[in-house]
Amino acid sequence: MIRAYAKFSKSSPTVHILILVLLSVAFVSSIYQLLANNAVWFAIPLIGSLPLIWFFGKASDYRRKFLHD
Image: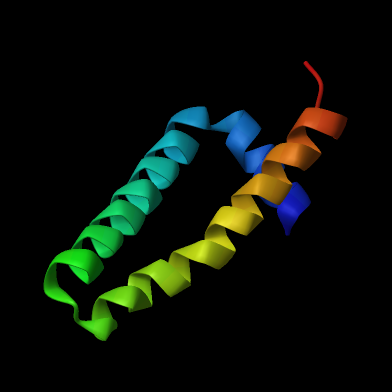
């Protein structure tokens, strides 16, 4: 699955950038809401985005190592 996403990110970088921007917005807004409102349920997007950040990091590492131009 990491290999497939690495190939996808290489073939359509604009969609990949859009996904990363949306994930970053969700992450930052979740942290802000968690700190501003002190409500635990704002941590749900934060917890959900952490595995995705790991996944994108592994896909980026695979792309850098094996998908040369």
